[in-house]
Image (cartoon, rainbow over all chains, first blue to last red; front, top):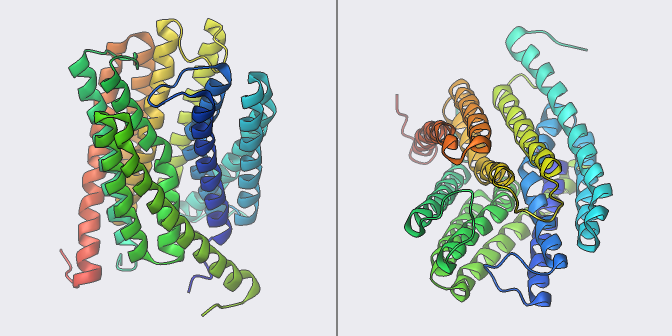
Length: 141
Length: 141
Length: 141
């Protein structure tokens, strides 16, 4: 019944969602550590870096989901799931690096960019193939 | 034609999207009430609580959509839709509580957490079942 | 194989994701121009307007994706894709207008609202039709 569902995309999505929720939790711990009560979002540099690191993950998360699922469904599920894992690793490096020092967010940032670019290229190729097939009856390869 | 589509998940998603848009509108009303022109995001405590309450909804909304749809498609649509309604109720309690007083956001926060946990557990079980079936040909139950 | 996939929705989604990523990039350029290092998010009015214009896009992006896909799958893919293009045009007007002056964000804001309303009405009609068909065996038209 469910054997044709894209279970790898679903698994990577759940993993990324739990990872993002964990980063939100981390901001809560940083609030307690530095005694910063909501709704305040300013404070010691370490708190502000933690807060912004999480915000940056939130800002790109919907973009990630769009390119993950479209590349997985229109191009190749295994490659998309692999790109999704790279993205999650990059997000983790970004977050833990940023908390220590602003500059240390950069290696994770570049890995996140690479993963998103990889997924976007696959998604675009898949859409072009699918569009040509559906509307112009042209089958590449 | 459309009779096999997950209409309950779609209905809960639209409801949650309209609810989130309504919270954004509420921030706009709070701007007018307190005469705070964009792009300013600081001001009297009530405005800052309203602003942060909406931000918090935005931060978790993509996570919610991921666990709602994956639990609904890979596990059980009716249970997922029920969990989705719980989430929306929790978000409403969080928002209206937070606007009055920071501490009053907590009951809604715990309901939101319960709903997300419920959906995440269902999604995870559904993914494991589907993975075993698809890649290892093992059918549980 | 992929000829029944909603390729127009996918194409509009990728376009909107790339557009949102470009706005994030624009905030980075504004940081460099005004020499504002992360995690700082305050500074000259032009930077703050650029920052908030991107944030506003992020806040509504998940709502957009929900109403785009549900209206496209439950009502009509071509009309939904058209509404999606309107939304992207509105977001571009909002962003470039807001950077110049806070008031100049309004034309784009109203176009975004119209596009979201259009998509939400189609999604709601599609859900009602699908619900009546699936659970009550009633077919309208």
